[in-house]
Amino acid sequence: MRMPDTHPQQTELPDSSDNEKTEPALLRIAEKPEEPAQPVTSRPPAEASPMTSPSPRIMERPGTIEHLAARRLPPEIDANTPEIKQQLARLRTEITRLLTSLRWEGASVEETAKQLIPLLNVGSIQQWKPILLPFLHEIDRAGNFIPVWLYIIDQGDPKDLSPQTNPADTVEGRARRFAVLMLGYHKTITTEQPKAIGFARQIANQNNAKSADLARVLGKLVLDPNLSMYAAQALVQHETTSAMQALISALKEAEGWAKVDIVESCLELKQEDFYDILLAGALERVNGLESYVAIPLYRKVPLERYLRGEGKVSLVQTQQAALIVHHVLQDSINPPIGEGKPQPSILQRPFPELAQALFESTRSNPIWQNTVAVHRLGTLLGRYWTAISRGELRDPAIVDPIYQTVPMMPEVERWMAGPGRDVLLTTVQAKPGEETLTPTVRVLGELREPRAISPLLRHLETTTTVTGHVQALTLGAMCDALGQFADRRAAPVLQQFLQRVVAIDRRSNLPRRADNLPTGDPEIPGSIVYASALRALGLLGDQSALNDALRAVNDFDPYVRIQALEAIKRLDPNGEDPRSRQVAREALNDPRENNIRVAAQLVQQYRDNEARSILQQLIETRPTLSGLAYETLRHLG
Image (tube, rainbow, N blue to C red; front, side):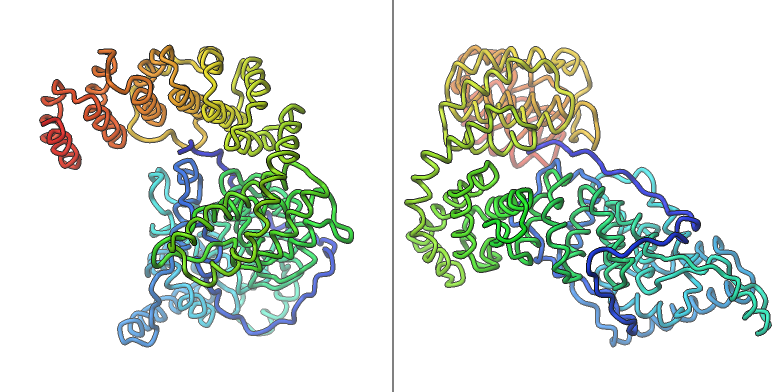
């Protein structure tokens, strides 16, 4: 469980003056001739959906609820049913009336938009867009509604929505997203519309009208994680040079879900010239969403060539190719045991050839990127082979490629036991940036490499402040690794580290929260470090850390409190310190339900009969937890 990530910047619609500028063509892009507009089709949700569940930190990132909902395949709507036909007939009448009023009767864009928005509230965007978009385009092939679409987009989503609300399910948000998708049917907008009705006057006014490329508008919208999914699809539908340029230009500054959507859309264009650019920058500024970027790249890009450094492949591209494989391996690390599980992403292309290319490149040119990927490869092969040996995996699509790759295992293990560990240690000792340290430290922790203890302790000893989210994640990875090493020399260093970098007393005096901290909250880095250190202290089992865990139960962040309770379970397993029993009883009144569940486990572990009255009260005051309370009372006897 991790904290929310930083949020991407919002975007605005460009001025029409910007749209009039021209740009040089990019790479060798083949622009297709204009064809009749086709409806935008949904990408199958499984195409880029990692097998691992998103962490709470990712769930609170802008756009997450909407993107995850869009990846769940909804039932299709049959446009030929009488009910849908009747609904579309009524809709055609209303929209045609609005179009006539706008075009011929002088109705304003604002007035038209206000009447159009509720008409677009037909249902799920993913269900309705194959029907509604071509339907709207048929009514307005000339693009008279374009200013209305732009006005609706510019109004933004409803304010003060809860983090768990999908803006695409609101009336305004749904209309806004349909408006973005409708821009995919039109390549330009006329900025000076003719106003006279007479035919001769129309021709004269049209000759003076200026047109602007809508790809530039969509190129800015695609940076907004709440609209990027729709703007990217609209740009793909344009199939023009300027649309391709807009996607590639946005790739440089996009972050989070916007980056995910842009990468997927660039791959849909099937322009192999884009592969070099995508590999070089696709994994930047997608912290926590790496799998969503890596999986589509893994499926489409010939990574073997980049891993081996063939031709004019740069070192950066080789590094990024290795990281892509690393993230896909991590996403597929657990065998899909049981019926109905999707095929692991790592096996959705020829796996033995790629594994061989990865290992060959790592032995010939060992760098931290391919070394951590080889470690993941060894872990995955070990887990899958165990599941196959037990008869838990029988699908030939999984068993066959694993059988072909398993003979590499002895070599992989020998290499990771020697040169591989040396590469990772050298990387840590070189004091690189956080983006390098975090994955390297995690692997060293998993390997239980004792030589990493000293450099990690030195790093914590010299850290006096936590300045940002990325640094906090790195420090958290270091704390986790030290906990895995089980070397109690780390305990006093971790305790002193907490005293320096976390405002423990101030945080304890804040009101206790039930929900996670909101995206961008300045307290998030401190929570990440605090929770990771508590988790490590619990694993180390040093009794001197019990005071730190007991105090942390009063923290205002529920994420920190639950880690404190877990640490107490390890540090005082029998409840010999009366303060541990008292804290467990008090935690039964925690505002966060998950924390109460852990507190109930601790009460059972201590067999604390003094908690009975609190559990009885819990049954009366919090019905959703009554089952837990009854079960805890039953265990107490």
